[in-house]
Length: 317
Image 1: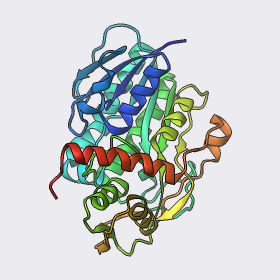
Image 2: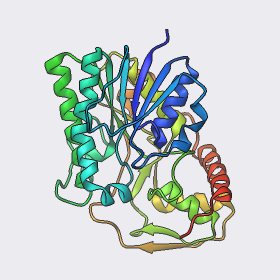
Image 3: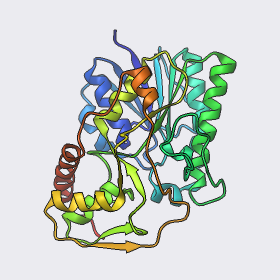
């Protein structure tokens, strides 16, 4: 049965893939984005479909005619370079934006899905990270603006569920990659691919022994949509449990691009997590979900996207 779905942050990397997949499944989509870090190029191919785009800052009241079945709240700067440059907008969209998006869901009696993050675990002392772990976050560190915005958003979403009876879901997203990431996104995979394709040195922070777990975008979207239709209101980790070091991912990207780039080491950013690996027992059990796209396949598709993107618009260093 078709539904009408509102997606905040619809012009972003994950938001645009969610919009496209929902349209493919026969749903109507309303995308809202203020284009602070999103890009209309990500959703330009959706214009002749059952897709309505509204340019709007969701820290302000959201007014929408007609019924809404689901509100997917994806609006937020998500890359370290973004939230370090935009600390106050990041906090505002996590707090005020979440409040307005929850208000829309409540007014329309819609199911609400919050895009949370593995960053709520901070630099974790538990490994791998289960949803029951409360985290190890520095609230006044440079990453605190993002971490605490998402932790507050989780608290408010849970309050709306408990106090108003709103059907609310929380997805904790681990490192995800794929087409439509920005060339200068600031995160490991797009950084390394762009550097490798342009013959630049790959900049690895610290000694590269810190670990991450990389999930391809189509796997993530599948997990999110399963959660959207599920009965659970508890937070659910969605990510790939295959853990690897940042140095390993850099080496893999050099091999797949055929680049002659070298790896150079830079200072480790403040509060950079040393480990990151999801425990996906809850997703396997409740959603019958686990990732299926291999790292090689996912990286190959992503590299091809970046190759085309760089050919269209060469990016200065």
